[in-house]
Image 1 (spheres, rainbow, N blue to C red):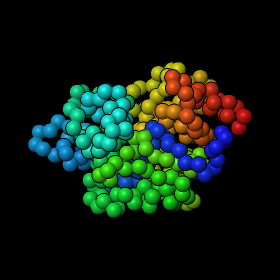
Image 2: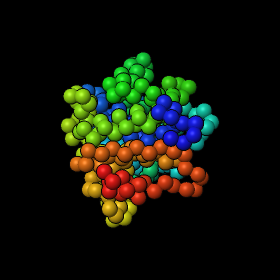
Image 3: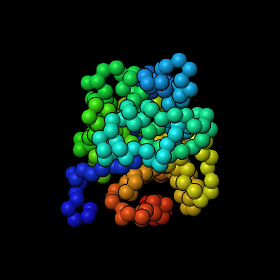
Image 4: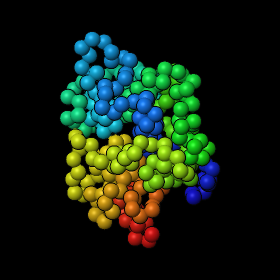
Length: 271
């Protein structure tokens, strides 16, 4: 650990939070609360003939909603106090859902908006990450930030420790089973590591699945390797078939990105 940090020091995950949000969706799918192929249950899109009603949870998981986005499109929410609902539910459709890949924080936030809508119980919603994921895994130093209306900002604002992230990765390395209890649907770990239809794999390039990045098109990376990826260098990487989870946290300098591909190659070689 860097000076000033240790096993119990919490810090922001940035977009590794997206993979945690996807996991909450997976738990809700297993519980029968959400259907990936149905229209996302976003209350603000229920007006007659609203074309956004065609957007499914699958589209949102794969960053393929087709909604307008200008970059991350959430600075006003992250830094200016805008709420999740007004930030994520008010943009218009630019492309047919499922036909265009565009990385957008709002797609992740709409997953959580959908979860809150189907739970229809604010207290249960606020407990859901803790009751269904963090406490079962022993991620006791992890918490999710909300906006002033009680919506989780699950595209970025999760605070945790390296060891808690390792527990999260071990859940995926174990096919969604933790200490004999299945938390995620059968096949969910393969699903998140399958290329989104609107972003087919390209040799030498990072791929994208369902709120996880895919590393296996990079030279020397084992097939099926996938990772969470935070803006400042936070990674939880799962190498299937190798009994291996790699966690790296940090705060990379502006304009510099940690070489996760080289790091994974080195760790696999030494494993």
